[in-house]
Amino acid sequence: MTRRFQVVVIGGGQAGLAAGYHLRRLGLDFVVLDAQAESGGAWQHPWNSLHLFSPAAHSSLPGRLMPHQTGEAYPDAAHVVAYLRDYEKRYELPIQRPVRALGVHRDGELLRVETDSGTWHARAVISATGTWWRPFLPAVPGRAHFGGQQLHTVGYRQPRDFAGRRVIVVGGGNSGAQIAADLAHDSELTWVTQRPPRFLADDIDGRALFDAATARRRALDQGRTDTGGVASLGDIVAVQPVREARDRGLLKASPMFTRLVAGGVEWADGTRAEVDAIIWCTGFRPALSHLAPLQLRGRRGHIATVGTRAVAEPRLHLLGYGDWTGPASATLIGVGRPAREAARETADLGA
Ligand code: FAD
Image (cartoon, rainbow, N blue to C red; front, side):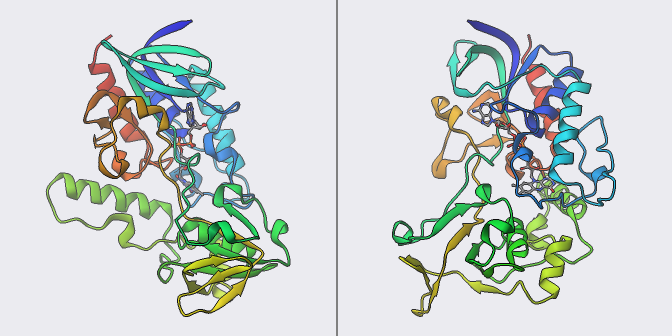
């Protein structure tokens, strides 16, 4: 069976919902295809202690403020999932679940979306599939020889699973710092980072990050000097558990080791540490394999965009993957504006 819409949105996490909100306001005929069985995108799968790095009111999609979570200045992931579930109901967003897009193809004037549940045709496609589904692991020699447990951020849940064990957490970003803080109390923790950790000032949270990303985009758009954006402030938001562990001296970082050996890791000077588990908090890449048939990837695997629009395929928009698809577009508060622009541009393509 084939179905035809003006716009197909691929991905029903926060970015896909923000796109849906604006497509609905513009009166477009659209569908959102989401691979998950339930609402909430990646927020359904985090580690147990994860909280937002901004208060609820500063973590809202267009049209509806996230309600305050009783007893929590910074809401937990379950609260975000409930908010997203409520959001899609409130705006009656036409979401089909679970439907996984397998490939987007050019088909004359239309784009054809092949999925595991049939085919959709559309004038335009907004891809909003996030990054959680494509964990990145750096190439480190000896990985195959290591006999202990290895997992990425996506596989970590709670400190209990590592109590009393010798654990290395790799990564100097927010995930690395938060998971290291989680494990600092009951595990034999070694936290390794490529460069000394850069904590943001204690009074800075996601609100300032959003402002910094927006100011940088504005400066670049107006041809002014690059302000450095979020990176100029630091890498780690000092959320409460991170601050507490750091202040108790439990978050001392070691430099990155150079290889893995059977029982652990080895640094450049030959020092070794015996280890039971390594948790790679080394980031993500955009989940874009469904776009491969369009052959848009340039050098280094990057798809060139102007705003959210793919330069080489103007019927395709990329939404929510990071600053390259709109300032702070990978955040709840930041995705609204690029979603509005993507929806408007798809409307301009006509019915
Ligand atoms: P996702 O939530 O991943 O949603 C994408 C959806 O698309 C999923 O349902 C997925 O199953 C689906 N999908 C994927 N591939 C396909 C396919 N081929 N076909 C159909 N569907 C598909 N942001 C904040 O604003 N505040 C925070 O405090 C914050 N903390 C974060 C903490 C962590 C650890 C991480 C990783 C991110 C955090 N973010 C935060 C960033 C961001 O808000 C989340 O990553 C968010 O989940 C991104 O939403 P998204 O809609 O782009 O992607």
